[in-house]
Length: 505
Image 1: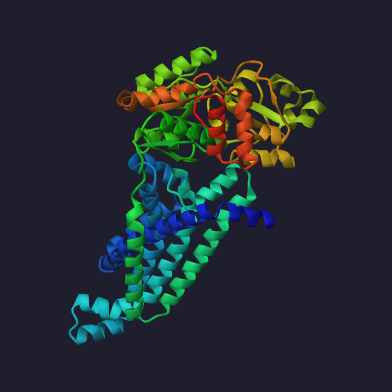
Image 2: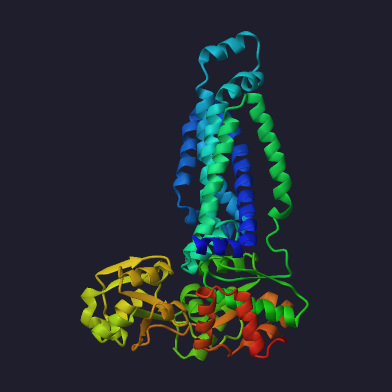
């Protein structure tokens, strides 16, 4: 509890802004969903042939996993709040639409006949009879949608939309329970609070419900619209994938660019896996990000390395991505954050494990924990199977930081790792030698559109100062300070650049 209180005290400003963003996303999404679903639900009561089809379509949309929807949004709408709101609206449509339709259809037929008998036209009957009687049911749908939106909105941090999900993702990435709770508890409290408020409104008279909702709408529009659509807001936007390493290096990019040029840089941390960040670059939502030479070849251009020499891999990656996507891969740093297979030190000593080939003698005892990406990618587990002839009986896929928790608890005894991962030190893991050279080099380098670099050559000059710098040991030590000593990525980046003589203190 004390650690949670300390975390709250240290990150209260970050929590406040995340909460504001979360409320903005939730209310704007709910308003748009209600504006779409309530009129549509009313119209469907008059055209019953289409009612079942359209309601079923919204039901199908809600069954699509939220991560899949977010991934599909990026190529169409980029990253940030716009695709996030679209995804949240999709999830909110069904309960409001279905309850509106059910509420209107549930009005007693004798009351409708009476309304017709006194000369009410259809519009007057709708607002004087049907909506007042159906409002309680409609509001129940709105309440359900609101709770659904608040919970789902924690995931939109994956595409740079902000909110409380930023804290949760940061906590997962750093295996920090306090950070996870700092995001999860306010999200739960917010959902409960909003549900209570809407329940109170639901019990008001029809006239008071309309007045209250209109007032809330106006307030939220005034609060939300000014900052809502501003995603970039700086001269240059540079993003990072999940992890401490992209965060540190991206802050180095920011510092160098601002030191060497007149531009300001906005850092967008933790935008998700390669596909998310790469799509954001191609759709001009960001200007550049840290990529790795092996990832370019294996994931982006689908061209396995012709040689495994670091310089040759970089040159192949640089030329291939320029030709296929017109992107510029600038000069790489020294560290090679390649893949490896890791085990606990005592496990390695017990079974005399030094290389991946040694796993053949205990193949049946291996319980592996891999990320979904490593389990599927060509130079991941499939390459281990083909090159080393290993076929593990049990392989579990999990989020990257969960692997360390699983190997520490003994649920798995083998995992994939990255050479500069700080958790290797924290959990006392041994990386087995890749004695058959399965894994290509993974040197970090800035990736931008070629037209951007042509227009702003001073950016390339500033960032190429990192070329050949930062050893594996230096990168791992910086990762450790951020992940386990809770130092700010910007401060760690600034200190390295200062000690390297690239900036003035």
